[in-house]
Length: 227
Image (tube, rainbow, N blue to C red; front, side, top):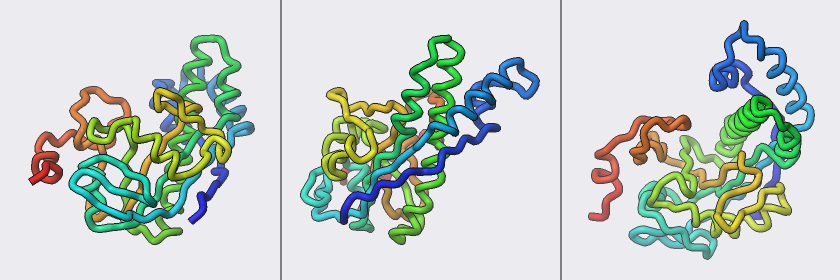
């Protein structure tokens, strides 16, 4: 299947953003932040590149998808009951990054960064259920290269190769460091999976602002360790 490109409506959950930025309703910064949000909504064009792909082969600690090898024991186990995966890259968009780059005041830069993060989060929340319905994934989970030691960030390279010319498609460049530009971009695999899975469950990092689930120190040994 060819890679699909979509422009996602630019949205911001203002209540959540204000909470994350620790801005109270009576703060003197509310008017400024509201103004910046309106600007961002006017220029922002978050995007996604994705496709339906199939697993060709499964080993002990790797899978091969459309002839491209991905090495991860956790990914392999999570794909045990399926051969269907949806590689994706979703981004806040170059337009929003260029808008944010015009600010030089420290506080404005902080607000702009938070807004870009909020736009990316809203884009993900909107598009993932659409993908699940489009491909009949049912209950689904994600894995992202670099989120676990088991699936390092260098695995971005084969993921981008699987999708094609992502920079030409949606403006996301993969750097030599395997980081993405715009930085407010996320890549990964989405796949059908019964039960719940978050990479956070396997990550012992403390005080992580992006944590979605508590760390389970026994989970790897119980489910993912090679027998």
